[in-house]
Length: 268
Ligand code: HEM
Image (cartoon, rainbow, N blue to C red):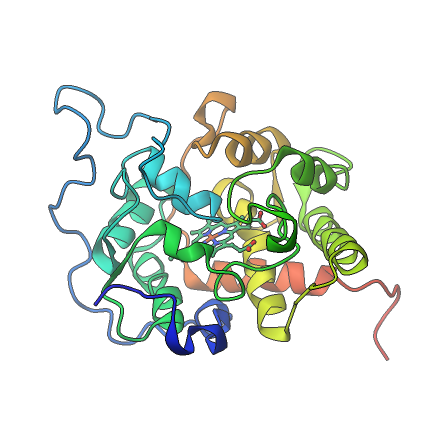
């Protein structure tokens, strides 16, 4: 059954799938299958060339999901994405470990436990997966909650005060976006589950393109990626040699969680 955005989904949270201790049980089935994700490109072309989405294609508020579709690492039309297809795409594009890559589909199951595939535009449902105070999207109250918004992103990047961007700067920009939304959006909604999910999202640029150990990422890579929904090879990024693990995702999430507080000094 395809992910639907109705029923009890509003109460579902991404938190369980994005917390540090990912449940990787039951993921022993083969992850890499031979289904081509590049159905819309000719076999003589690079199957992972970047091609902008057409108006008919489904896209989402997630810059990485859109990037994978634009490169044909998942179906270019953004539809019918299975656990296996998503996992294959994340392994091949940004070198997530097969286990971590497969576990990402649990995000979808947290929205609809019976889902076997999803379309990217299903992620646009407000306060299901999509939420307020994004780094690069308008709050739903103000308009389009899923397309990249340069004005919002400029707010975010104004808090990236040096290069490389650190986990602290990413966290600062996230908190700033929350304060801005809380001040100006009368429907601002940000439950604890969203906050936890956001810590992982905010750290994702480090996980995908940065130095995980030091919690940093080249500013050019992040900016290029957000703005173009394209892997930032043109600005010097190279896919990392060692696969990204669930433990690393947890560690980067914790870096952000530790950095969002506004009080200085040690906790009592
Ligand atoms: C099944 C896998 C995934 C799903 C279903 C998913 C879904 C989403 C959704 C619904 C949002 C919107 C949240 C908001 O309203 O701001 C989002 C944001 C985001 N996602 Fe993903 N995501 C997935 C994997 C990834 C991966 C692997 C990366 C990068 C390594 C990534 C990077 C991001 C970032 C940076 C944001 C924040 C965008 C912003 O605040 O403007 N996502 N994702």
